Length: 134
Ligand code: CO
Figure 1: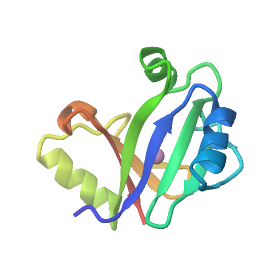
Figure 2: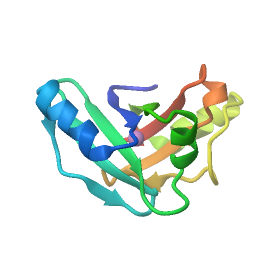
Figure 3: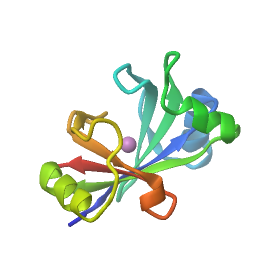
């Protein structure tokens, strides 16, 4: 059911420093920071030949990644995103198998303008999983 790895998201305490490291030290193609107020994050997209990296930094007071950064002050891998063809079919299949969908269970429009859902990390080997319809 899942397709390509769309991106790996990394929460970082200092977005400028992390973007500079990927650009200057690792030699990657790094985009400009984008505020995503609906998701409580500022994102920097890094394009790799086979996938993307998203650097996430909290935006506003109720950011979903603030608690993560408190637990991981130097930053860390936050989630992986897999592509699916039909997000509602994927959700219903996963729920039928006992997986927990975060939030109200309805897809939201993600950072790439496409519907996304998040699955509970405790149901997926300790990893927060995002599904994105492509
Ligand atoms: Co993501």
